[in-house]
Length: 150
Image (cartoon, rainbow, N blue to C red; front, side, top):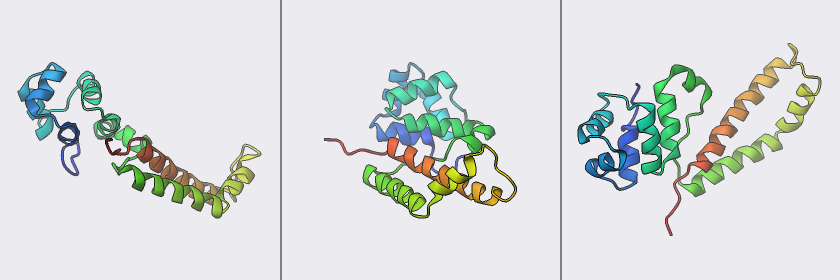
């Protein structure tokens, strides 16, 4: 499993303010299992990740785990960055306005109305598809953004 940055399981646990011991107790597993997951020695099984998502209150962890666990998932599931809510909202809205301001919405309608993407339309469609992927990432960043606690 690729580990580009800090361990996703450790980051999620620490963000929730749990020690390894407290997390192990909440998850019903051993401290040594937590250490193995957080050091990258072992990959937690799906049922443990499900429990981590709940115990750590981090749906983002579930997405990160799926992406880290399967090559196919990396090509389908966006790489959602953990941002603070205001940053995530601003990025998302900026991308929406850019999409509409450049008339990509109208271009997509024009391309798609006959249900066929012909050779002439293909480059524009691919460009729009890339932009839509970025919009989806930005939308997911809003959904999973860090919110200030009141």
